Image 1 (cartoon, rainbow, N blue to C red):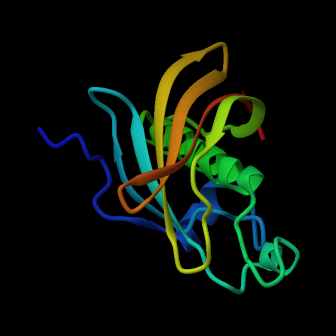
Image 2 (image 1 turned 90 degrees about the vertical axis):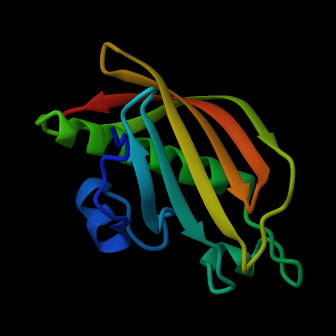
Image 3 (image 1 turned 180 degrees about the vertical axis):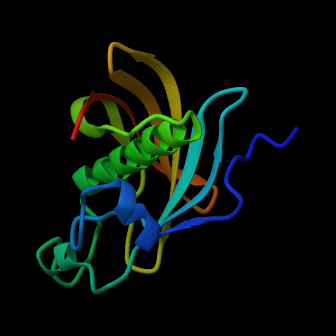
Length: 155
């Protein structure tokens, strides 16, 4: 059985149907895959380009993606997982808010030209709160990781 429920990638235009974020704060360009079993998991992607507005000040002459934006990108991937899962189950998606970040770790800088792969696993859902284990990779190397707690609220 194929646990990848997406017939193809979910592109940025379609992502905007699920997430309220817009430029310059939409930090997921594509959903590459999603699975429901043995665990709910989503793989997303963010292309890091030199024209990102945050590079103007972080840092001039040595552009580095801020860690807090890597966490936000992982949170948006978690939101996409929640929305797509709700859609598969025939439910109306909620608006998800980031409630808590635990165990954030950054192990390598992310620079223009990198492709950030966002790997999100849903650990549990309880009382409209979702707990997610997240990591961001460049190539095969983990550059950031964290645990997120998100709360759902009807839009």
